[in-house]
Amino acid sequence: MRRKIVAGNYKMNLNPAEVAELFDGITDYHFIEENKEMKVFPPFIYLSEALAKLGKSPITVGAQNGYFEAKGAFTGEISMAQLKAFEVESVLVGHSERREIFGEDNAIIKKKVDAALAEGLEVIFCCGEPLEVREEGTQKDFVIKQLEESLFHLSAEQMKNVVIAYEPIWAIGTGKTASSAQADEMHKDIRAAIAGKYSEDVAQSTSILYGGSVKPDNAVELFACENVDGGLVGGACLKAADFIAIANAL
Image (tube, rainbow, N blue to C red; front, top):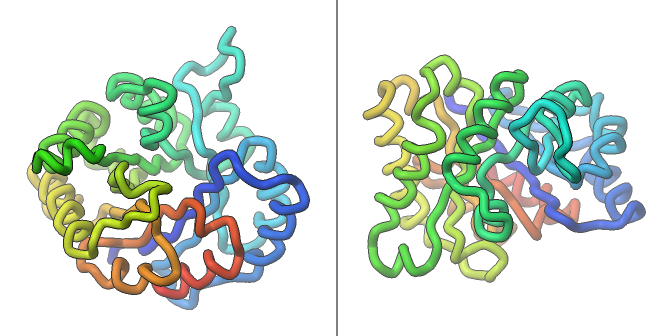
C-alpha cells in the first residue's frame, strides 16, 4: 500500500511569532490510518523549533534544500550531512523555484539526490513543466527527461527512499490548478516511466504527490485521483486550519 502524504513547504515565509502559532496549530494532528503522513518543510532558521515542537508528534520535519558537498567554502549553503546531524528526515530536491531562480539543472539536482540518499535522508524529488511546454503538448517528454537525468540512475532499493512531487510550474503560486484529469494523467505517465525503468512493484510502491496550488477547496478532487498520493502544499500550508483541511481530504 502506497504512503499517502501531505507536505507543507513554507518557502521563505513567516516570522517567529507566526511560525510558533502555526506549529501550535498542527502539533496535535494525527492520522488514524497508518499509511498517511504529514510532513513540514520550514525555513532553515526554524528547523530547531520545528523539531522541538513537533518531534514527539507523528509529523516529520524536512528541509527545503541542501547542498551536495559535505563541507567546505560554500557560503550560505547547508550540507546534507549537516541536515542529517540535525535530525532532519527529508529534503526537497529539484523544486521549480530552485531550478528557475537559482539555475539548478538536472546535473546539479542529480548530485543533490545522491548526497541526500548517502546521508540516509528521504528525497522529495520535484519535477514539472513550465507553461510553454504544456502549451506545446510535450509535458510528458519534459518531465520524463527530468526523471531520467536526475533520478533513474538510482537502484530499485534506493527508490524506496524517494517520493516524487509533480508540480506543474504554471500552477505554482498563480492560483491556477491542473485539473484532476491533467494531474492524474501526468502521475500515471510518471508511474509508467518508473515501471519501465525498474518494475511494476517499484512503480506501485512509489508515492507521487501533486504540487500546484493545492487548497482546501480542490484537495478532495485531486486526492481522489487513482495516481495522486497526496500533495506538496505551498501557500495553503501557512495557515493551520487550511493545512489540516487539506490533510483531512487525504
